[in-house]
Image (tube, rainbow, N blue to C red):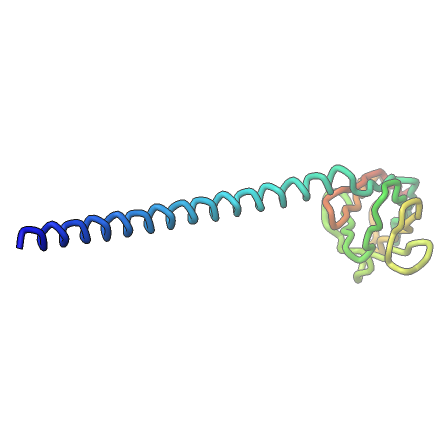
Amino acid sequence: MVWMRRGYTNTMTTLILFIGAVLAVSVAVSAMGYMLKQYQNAMQIKTRTSTLQTLSILSFVTGSGDANNLWFYVKNVGKTNLDVNKMNVYVDNILVGPCNSALVTCTDENTDYTLIPGEVLDVNVHKGYPSGSHDVKVDTEYGSYVSGTVVVP
């Protein structure tokens, strides 16, 4: 009977060690999964940051206005094609609207709504503004923007 008790103890010890090993492996796998997820998130952030550093920049060309309209030109001087319909236009720090909305008409040279590198965008704001200088700004879907001044006589 003594040897049976010793066998039972060995079996229980083995079972406890086995359960402990399974728990240790589970914790290690969970920790590895968490670290892998953190690594993936860091890589996504790095990719977005790299994209922002190389995206297209718009250049303000010229602008003018009258009692009914403000119009100005911006040029894509970067290396990325820009979706014209995802650009927003601001006048005096107020969002007038996205390109090609009720108050804003944006026309690129090829009229395909894609501003390719080197292409100029004609922006026309159909809203009356008083005489004087007005700050205009166009931003892209990537967060880059260009600003300038339009003078209404």
